[in-house]
Amino acid sequence: MRSIKENMLLYAVTDRSWLGGRTLAEQVRDALEGGATFIQLREKELDYDSFLAEAIEIKKLCQSYNVPFVINDNVDIAIACGADGVHVGQSDMEAGDVRARLGADKIIGVSVHSVEEALRAQERGADYLGAGAVFPTGTKSDAETTSFGTLRDICEAVHIPVVAIGGIKEENITKLKGTGIAGCAIVSAIFSKPDIKAACEKLLDLSKETVEAKPEIKKVLTIAGSDCSGGAGIQADIKTITVHKLYAESVITALTAQNTTGVYGIMEATPEFVANQIDCVFTDIRPDAVKIGMVSSAGIIETIAAKLREYKAENIVVDPVMVATSGSRLLSDDACDALIKSLLPLGTVITPNIPEAEVLCGFEIKNTDDMIRAAEKISSMVTGGILIKGGHLVSTATDLLYDHGEITWFSSERINNPNTHGTGCTLSSAIASNLAKGYSLKESIGRAKKYLTGALKAQLDLGKGSGPMEHTYIIKY
Image (cartoon, rainbow, N blue to C red; front, side, top):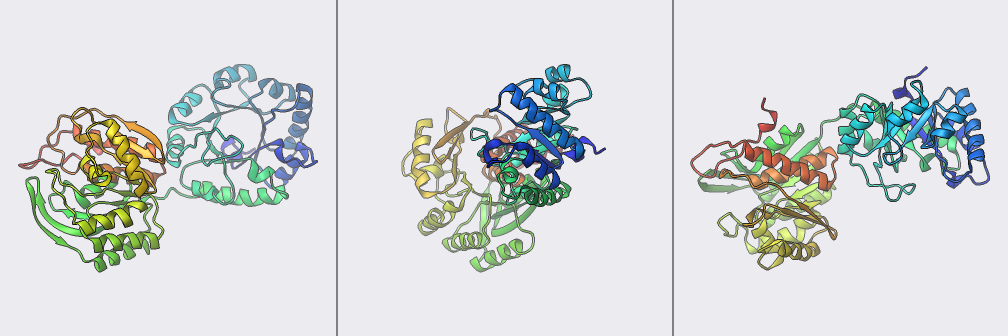
């Protein structure tokens, strides 16, 4: 007898939407012949007697194939038909209550969307978890998508099997590689198909490939200038990426001679050499995310944009380094135009501070209402999200994410620490790191801000001027 975890591999969830004159039992038989390893009967239309008769018939089928059979939500039907267990949602019934009714020998599955829900379900007696929806799904149009990062966190947090559910099909199932799932729960990609058996055979092979794949270290590329004192630029980015347990790659746009008291020299790379570096990275160790920092000339900016388009780079975070802390402009007019026209539109998110946002929107930002107006204006220049960092406002340390009309505020305590050299570099590379791990944009920003707060709270004090943060605080004992 296979373990529960082994039975999760191809978890088929029934749906009456595609019967086409056949019975649900006939469809389930085809799924079992195709290799389905677990059957969940989901039924919301039938009366009790018809539901029970259907459940008894499908239970006998599953027994003949030695495949576990559970009922969705309805404990009474599960008991009456002798099902192997029940799968319940978060809002339906606690696992402990279900256990009390079913007994110790039955299987209980619980739908979860977060680590907290997963741990609670495990503590209260769940045998396995269904996590999702991992992709948009038509069977539950109101379901909020669970990011790959959260799915991975759930798998790492519990010791019971986790099956991914929601919108999974042949075209996307292998995107779940390395998350730690025990299998995939699938509805339409099985039961909507004219040949259910063939669909299951294909999905079973893909599920095995997905589940058996070893976790792959994610890679993040930083394209920025070098800070020889280590507090900002490439050096800060590599530290940040590394403590996020990712593989850091770098393309250097300029060498700087600087320390905590100022910048004393800049040696810019040629556009051709920047292109050469990007080619070397993408043709060998392709990054899962890209962070872009200091880009000082129109030629370099255009080169970077062209190469990112050529390689179809994903998860791009653009930190538009345009204005110094003193307020002086760091980019020439032609470089600024190139940044706005060529690079910013490629960003999954751009991360301007208040002075930089003022350059982009063309008016002064004094409060949170102005931040919203600025984001609305800047949104016409970009295709991704806009994170306006509110640290320059006297009254708040709140950041605004404006993502296709949706507004999200991120508040954090203001840390009394004069050593803030490299905060912008650090935040943007932390966002890129979390995007590479599979977190949503909102999750990535929230986690990055938490990391940045910890780095400031560590109160590292180096140098004679505005010193660096403690990037490695997170790995200290």
